[in-house]
Image 1 (cartoon, rainbow, N blue to C red):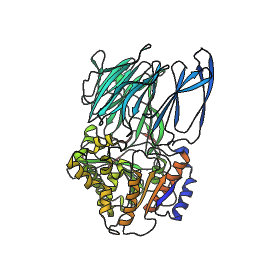
Image 2: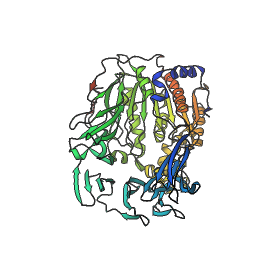
Image 3: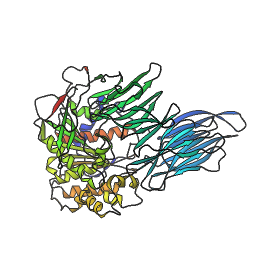
Length: 621
């Protein structure tokens, strides 16, 4: 059940939320799907040990999926029914009188695959670290351990799986190791270490060939034959390999945006997403045609063909112009900003997004709530700070460990840059961030509280020191690779103490700071963010604020986990309520504006090369 743990939501905000729910553009079907709350019934044909065929009806709960395997003699059910990322694997085999549960394990990684005559998966430990590769086949007394990663700072991942071959990766400390898993009809699969041409590589199986991507050198290798297949196009930073039907694709970055390269068509076959947008590839083998599902804050999802040497032709919503800016951080590094500015001569309120962690780029598909902001004359900015992946691996590494402070310095530089723009109302800015981005947003807010009118945090990471010193904390091994290990490094411990929003808010006397209004959300079964820390932070934030208004700080608790809610409707209702709060904080108009200008097909916006200082370059929609 959704509930308010801190503060009181004012009636006029709930009334506005009801008004928003009536808008067609903000209904659940217009958004990314959340976890379905309905059971699904599947019928599956099985062959019993005597050779007879039988039909079984399987009922899957919310969050579960079905995996048929091994010549219709068994199947598996994989699911996270509680939303807490404790995935459970159930293996059933055909029996004379129906089906029998042959094996049951949790937690496991969600990627479970068929290999040969058995099932392949990765076991997680109590802190959810993927550490053992397992295989099970009919007649086995239990699973066989094919590989184990003893180093607690590393994580196993299945990268590619075919009928009889798989690629296993072990990631950690900026390096990746790979193994080839080969299936055998009459014996357990074998595990062989892959000869590495680079400590920073990705590997996949394509057309029965093991292909290696040497990221630093931008080379594609045929591992079995030992020769180079292709070299990355100029300006393209390769990240990972992906197969789509018969096509081998390389996903990467170019001109600060997501880019996709089709090596078989040469260096000219490279395409970029619109600014702050995304592309999902698909390959039509019959027509030998690569297609993209592309979208951005100003492009609704649309399928477009990829033509060699040509930019993607996308249809804009007409809501805003795209500006590509830079902000100079304290050490002189120029930090990219993508700003979507609605039409009009008047200055605009602003919503600012930030993340900056784990090498993840801050960009995403079309979002109805962002579109609604633009429709009401609210500008939207994405700050591509260090720690993210917008400018490649080095952009990420520049804000890890002892350099973690740079995320906050970068973000404050971006805020200062945006506040100085004549097109922005400097005292009507809301910052929104989720998960690890919450640390950066909250720390920046506590440092410069008068720069913001609102702070919106979703499942935020607020107490890094407590998490990283707790050996039982979920995903602590991954977080230590990102932030450093305060258990053994005093300098990291002192740095995290200085950066920690929790440590800072606890130091503030009651009613001592002009903190902006805040809306903070926690999930009941969050396996990553500490709900107790979120609640304590919300209480301390309320106490330290000069404002005594009961609606100044709102902390919500919602069903589901870190990544998704329990149902589409519940997620939509909560997002709409938070959106109503944000519109109220910004003083946005009650009614939406219609798109202005002509909506036409054009090439996506192009930002100038990295490192160029700009006062604001307007680009095509």
